[in-house]
Structure formats: C-alpha cells, structure tokens
Length: 84
Image (cartoon, rainbow, N blue to C red; front, side):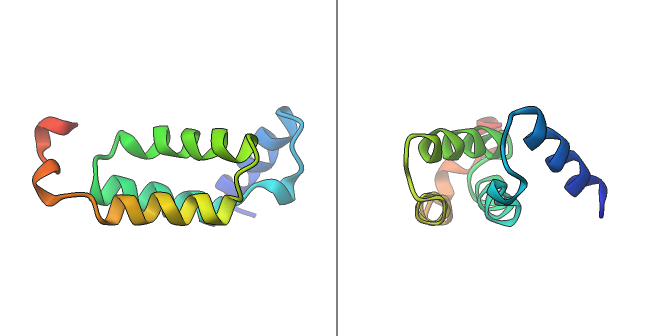
C-alpha cells in the first residue's frame, strides 16, 4: 500500500465512508484533465464539485466523464497564466 492509499483509507474512515466508495483513479483523472486543460487550482475545486454532485445523487462515472469532457474542450485562449 502506498502513502496515497493509506491517506485515502484514513480520510474515508474519518468521514465515515467505505473504502470502496473512494474512486481514486476517477477523481485523479478529472483533476488531471482540469489541471492540464483549464487551470491547476481548478483541479481540487472541481474534485469537490464532483463530490457534491455525487453526494446529491449523480452517477460518479457519468459526472466525471462530463467534467473531463468539459475540461478537454475548454478553449485554448482561456488558458492563460493570468487565470492561475
């Protein structure tokens, strides 16, 4: 087990979540897409938004796919250093 897996297990337990509910790769993929295609600080905030949507009943895979699609289609002209 690596440090990330240990942390996620401990954080999930702290919040009363089952370890199998943690969709690590799905979340990291969305965060990567946002960080690389939109703006880095958007990655953790988008992960939070994904969590809110899932908490309100959205399907995790569908919501993640929609966010990744939005991020990868983000206009290049909007990707400026000033956006950080």
